Length: 250
Ligand code: NAP
Image (cartoon, rainbow, N blue to C red; front, top):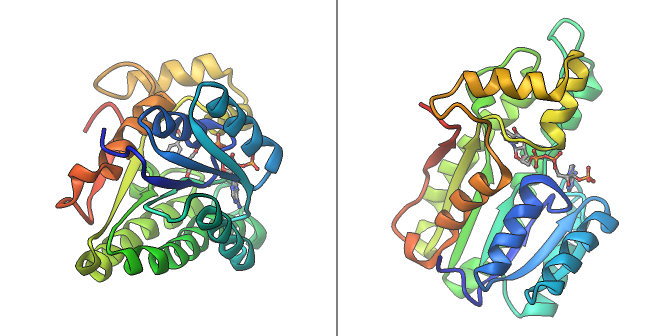
């Protein structure tokens, strides 16, 4: 895929889908800024990439804090000279039925997903507009369509679709595309935590999720990384404002 020599900032890349996306970008020749709220996790992913012969640096950044976002992009540009691709992957869940959800649970999810996506895109577009090139890939979810126990997360993931389409409209004239991937059930720590909260084994939870889709298996971080690579590639220059569901079904 066409991300050779491009500079990609990937948030929440210490583990899960973000880490796999970082590895796949590096394998395809991109210089990767592996960012995570916990530096140690980002460092682990970046070290793995470098050990495989790829180019990567680790950066610590809480995407909901403007100063940290500004510092992350400063470091990216100091190291690699530019920023071509932003992958807004960082995310958390604080699931609870609406009648029990606290303000803190609601605000935490909105802050990381919605504000984090906004802040990273806003700072990234400064560099991208100046170079007349950019790819922004946001993370929505099938939960954008509604999901029990996720009034906060559903709102955030639906909002991210709105951000995606608006950025596509505003930034298209600068040859910056903005698209979203919307994964279904992907096997990561996030879905593992949901199984624990529901009091069922992860194996049973996966079996149930697999039965719900057409392909009859759960998704992997690689499945999602592949969709992100497609939107990030040079060749996807006429595709913008789209939401691609990566869910093994319709
Ligand atoms: P994950 O395994 O829990 O990884 C999420 C990553 O985001 C972690 O490395 C976490 O860092 C980081 N993060 C959390 N808050 C952050 C913050 N404020 N600033 C920077 N980084 C932060 O989750 P995942 O399953 O890979 O999910 C990745 C993305 O896909 C998320 O946007 C999620 O909503 C979306 N998604 C996942 C699924 C699924 O089934 N797994 C489905 C649909 C959408 P720490 O290590 O510091 O916690």
